[in-house]
Amino acid sequence: MDTPRVSRVTPVDARARESGGESGAGSTLTDLLLRIAQQDTDAFAAFYEQTSRRVYGLARRVLIDPELSEDATQEVYLQVWNSADRFNPAAGSPMAWLMTLAHRRAVDRVRSEQSSTDREARYGAATLVPDHDDVVDTVTQRLEAETVVKCLDTLTATQQESVKLAYYGGLTYREVAEKLGVAVPTIKSRIRDGLLRLKACLGVN
Picture 1: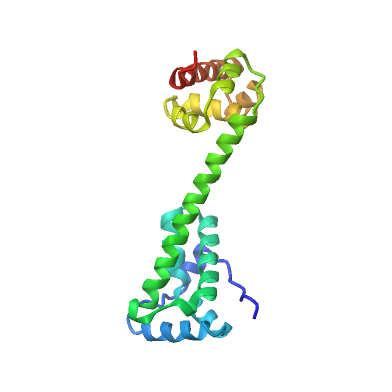
Picture 2 (picture 1 turned 120 degrees about the horizontal axis):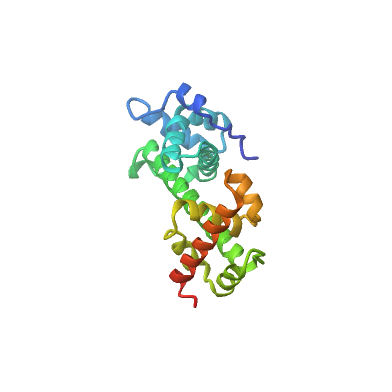
């Protein structure tokens, strides 16, 4: 049987739903999970309606971002559909099992997003052909991406913002200046000072 469609959970939906909870609903959720294990789509819909508020709420607390939280919630319920037969009533309540799945999924999302950011940083470090000045050339030739990510934290907020736009965003001085609403000479100074500080942090001579 095809996987049932999982509705996207919005903040409004989350507030409107009644949680399945643990008081008086535990046995009902257990029954629903047993039916879901038999690929019962009606049971799945009922389980989703009773519990999605709490799953979304947990995901939102971990991920902050509403869209990522919605995606994580969808993934949790797809996991429920595919693994309901693994639920063991003797090991804990349905809600505890579900919230464990939700927490793991949210944490996985956090790690995935961080990994994606790191990959972009490494890619930018490896492929950028800057056209700003000799300081940029020196840094790009000698950097190690992971170290650069750490060294970026040593820059001031304005230096970091300008360097990221130019270095990772591939913008020219003028484009960075227009984006930040700052004069081009100021942007040049920020980027050059920032890159000099990066050189010192990276040990580039």
